[in-house]
Image (cartoon, rainbow, N blue to C red; front, side):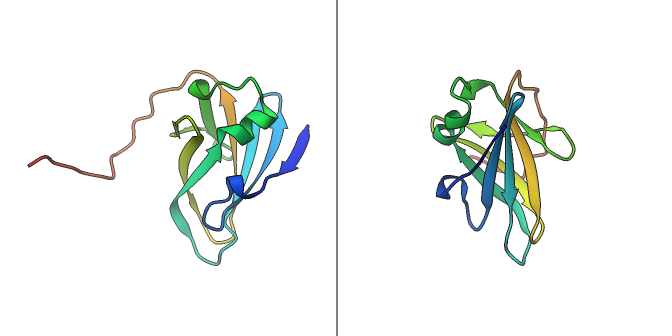
Length: 117
């Protein structure tokens, strides 16, 4: 198993990440070092950094798994990044696993509303 601390590519608004590469995917640890909670914090992981650890990884088949609940989380992928949100308490560290597979449809309550007038 490789352990590698990554530079600012995985740092977002005081969040720091480290990656552990395993056979079943990539373990991402994200920490909120601040003294206050960060609800719905956006995490952006660069595909270029992920592919350094998993060269044959296909971004279109990415699954994001919560380290604690083992539930599949909602995420969005574009050409450059894998994006997802999570709530962080002060000084909290969370683990997520990125692996390949078929995505389930995750129905969530919408937190936005728009209307064309």
